[in-house]
Length: 194
Ligand code: SF4
Ligand code: SF4
Image (cartoon, rainbow, N blue to C red; front, side, top):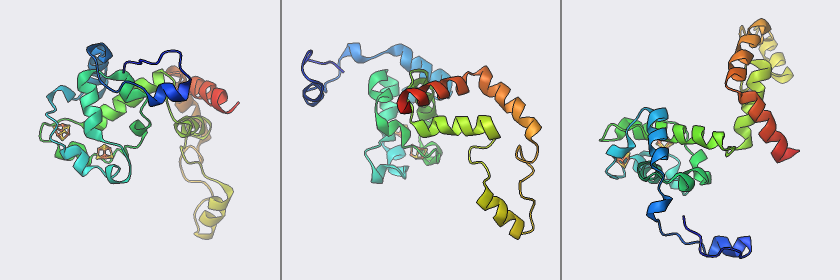
């Protein structure tokens, strides 16, 4: 997206931003990267809109999956990655079920989220989930209230997962360390929250 107000205050710059798309806004490498990670074929999209019509997030927000598939096809990396709507997909796969071109729009979104993370563009709640998994092996760990409820139900206080077998957490940590997920999650959370 070209900017014609260089040097103006940020708010004015944003307001007067040139919303036309230029050929230099397109990064063909982005298209290739998204296709490679998603293992689907956004270049086959003919913009029928079935995906957006199937999407439970669309009626409640400005999120339009069809638009993101278009961005993938045109290589509009900045447009796609800095758009907060990128994080509104629930990964329900309705769009993938119904696309007449056998595209998996859900996986296009997942690929874009992966690329966004490599640029530190990611909501903090995802990072906190990484931290929780690293420490406990669970995205939503057990807690004392649940333990008491489990006891009342005649269940063991902890389920037979990494909670009951904490020795397996090391393996999970090994995987997260291999992809440097925990390191990056800690760094970004610290930058955002101090
Ligand atoms: S349903 Fe498939 S072909 Fe139709 S707009 Fe969505 S991605 Fe494109
Ligand atoms: S997978 Fe995501 S984009 Fe597709 S219909 Fe569900 S919420 Fe919408």
